[in-house]
Length: 156
Picture 1: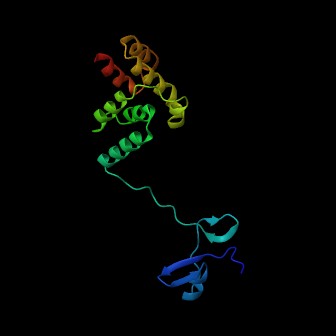
Picture 2 (picture 1 turned 90 degrees about the horizontal axis):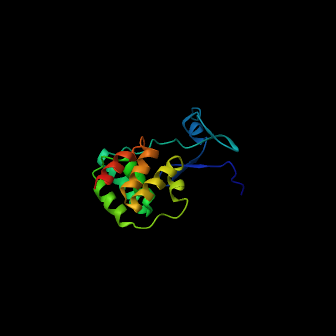
Picture 3 (picture 1 turned 90 degrees about the vertical axis):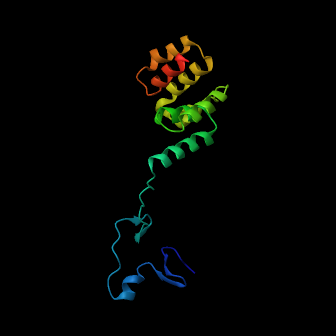
């Protein structure tokens, strides 16, 4: 049996109609589609749903959970750069401080290509833990969102 170009639309349990059959069954034309599936002209693509909307608290929690699950210093640093006022900031800092080894090469670039050099420099300064390391980071990246955190950590 040849099924190419044949799609079933489920209307109710146990009731299916082939695409285009709806118009014939109701006596009217089939519903127009705004997009077609490549290779199957006349067949409509499923609608694109908007992304879910989260509260600010849920959004911050999800971002923190994702950063923690990534298992890298770069992910935690990126979280701190993007969510500086997050209620999970202190927990992220504690997890970052517990990490005493640098990430494998390319970790930051895989997470945030545009900010990879800044993330790596921040982590290097953090691991060095010296005032001069933080000053070098600030001299090179003083306008980045991580600069405020670097100043706080340098003051400790």
